[in-house]
Length: 312
Image 1 (cartoon, rainbow, N blue to C red):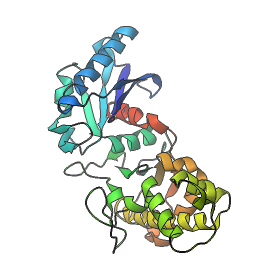
Image 2 (cartoon, rainbow, N blue to C red):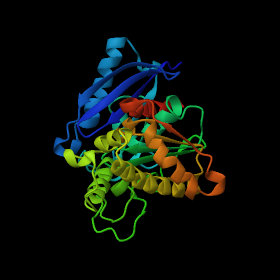
Image 3 (cartoon, rainbow, N blue to C red):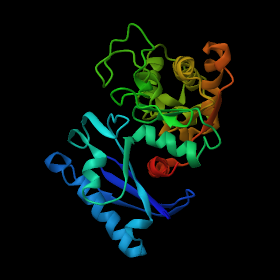
């Protein structure tokens, strides 16, 4: 009978790994470097060797391992195949479970890293107890993971949940990293908040603490907490964009809960006070009661969600 599972979260700099029991308890976690040279050809062999070493250390036979789940930064279809490119890793399209499974003879399942993080929050984090969830990661960009009736929504080419690239603004002159203009990511990410702040500060000379130093998402929300009126205006603009964007998402997938994570979410509950009212103002009536919570698993969401791929 299976007693353990491994969760793997592949990032551009490090690979996070976790050993779990079948009830979702995290027994051990560690990291290895992500070797991206030669088109990332060493990444999966390194993962396999690291897992083998942990199994030997803990005295775990293959028969006791339910499987390995792995999240990767790229579009992954429902069969675990990378579709297109994982730019940060140097990977092109290939079958991830088949490739990793050739090195270690246990079941392997793979998914996009943002979707996997959403699955982790559903399983053991802020979304525990729900079956319909949208996880929103507010970092350098805006990531998303969508779960409907307890199942990850990957889409035809693995691009399901790319909510950061919803079009929310006409007339934008700057391009998003995806090549389009007016994407949600340009206004609701950490870099987007800085963009909004600089534009607001350029409109007039109204006094603000934000004129005194380097602007960041953190400095904006710190200023909001201190009662800076210009910072509050910036946060309101951020909340308007994100609230409207999530209202669009809700009209499509009708979640029970939005789980907000990523570096920007470290601002805490005050962040939600700018998003929720705008969401409820614009949402379809039957979707308005969706709850908003902060993510709880932090950087471990990926390994939890990866393990959940084989345990849940």
